[in-house]
Amino acid sequence: MSRRLGLSVNNTSAAERICRDYGLADPAPHWHRTVGYTAPTSPEAAPTPEESVAQDREMARLKADLASVKRRYAAALKSANLHEDILEIARQEMSRYAPVEIQPPHIGTGRVEEDAILAWADWHADEVVDLDVMEGYNEYRPELVCRRAQYTVDHTLDTLFRCHVGTTFGRLWVFNLGDNITGMLLDENKMTNSMRPMAALRFLARLQARALCELSAHIPVTAVYVPGNHPRTSPKMQSKLPTENGDWLLAEMVGDLTADNERVTVVSPKAWSAVVNIRGWNHSLNHGYSAAKGGYGGIPWYSYQRTDGKLTALESAHGKRIHYRWWGHVHQKSEIPMMDGSGDQFIVGSLMGGNEYALANLSAYAQPVQKLVGVHDKMGATWRYPLDVKHADGESSRYEDLI
Image (cartoon, rainbow, N blue to C red):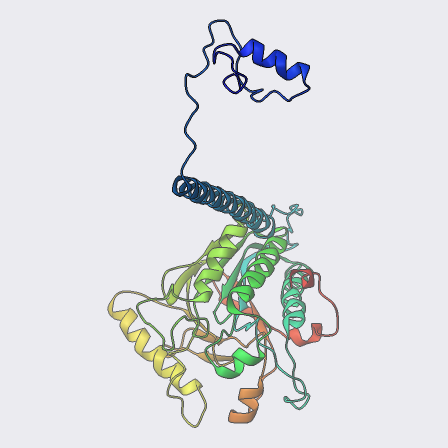
């Protein structure tokens, strides 16, 4: 501007005065006017068109990179928040159950002291049994799982402390004999089951944990789980991998949920069988999938007897003695003498009861039932009660909020 006005390039004050007099805008308001300032001796060369294009491209690239970083940062924040939300929900839903208020001990009026065994077998909690297809014999769905499970809890307590008022009970043993869920191994189950296997295990873990806690308010509880054949993770049974099974995972989940309750003990051996000593009597637990193979005329009792004879010989050769065997799997209740003549085999029925497969393919049906047995120091297994859980179908359950 000074040069165009015919002034010295260093005489900026004169140029500014002329601009003010004629109402012109300051051509360079961003210049720093400080003592000792010296204007450039020559104007900066304007960029070439190629340089301008390159600068524009670089600016566009930087803006795009900045926008990408902002998007990734926002996505990372959302992902982190969602992760935390899921963890918080999981903590709330699967947090450990608080110990229930312990009831005063039930002291019997007589001198008899016993333990008791509540057998849970073949719940198949995810399976749906259609009443019409079953010709009115039976139906099954998650609501009935809750009602029948509550029946086993309430009637166990009634039997121990109202029917056997003369007996002091030291401990309740809960034998879980497997097949807690049906799973998705069969195509028809994939179409008709009420929920997927993982959802069914979560539902059942919370239900059984609550049931054990309620029982523990009245009597210390030890629950022993053995795996069945239905919740396996492979098409065929894998003898070496008993933990690759939903029943084993269920036991671990129930153990985690009840870990803060000192009156509940959950045992989940990494094996297909378990042996429990109760008041000096050895009880062997196994689901019964292999033991029931090879029955005569469709009747599995022959195969159970054969299996018991072979196991008794094997155990005797190694100095072991089993007094009672507990089986599930066939969904029919029964008691069979052991081959040595001094004990019994308890075949426990199913909480589900008969389903469409049994009716259509085997022309068979069995009522849904579980089992309750007393154990005495000298007499061994004493009284036995079938728990006919179908009586609970018509009433709502306090467990149904878990569905």
